[in-house]
Image (cartoon, rainbow, N blue to C red; front, side, top):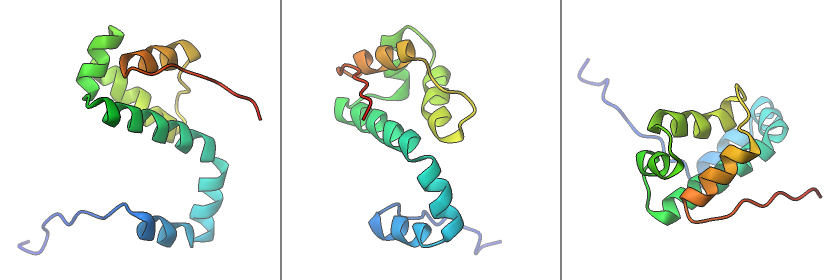
Length: 102
């Protein structure tokens, strides 16, 4: 049991490249690229604002668990956040929401 210590996995470009070399992982990633891009945007905005999930939740007028669900929902696909919710999140981190069709 002494060897069962937690070893964090670096989530850097090399790790991403290693994961994406697996055809099944690559196919799943490609199918969900938009969700990952949105998640990356909102997490980056929150980090840039220097805010915790609890602080974002307070600014949105909701609970931290709701922000946790919002951030995880983008990856899990269990729930797609509404435009209104994303707009509130953006405002809470000092940004504005823009949607573009390309």
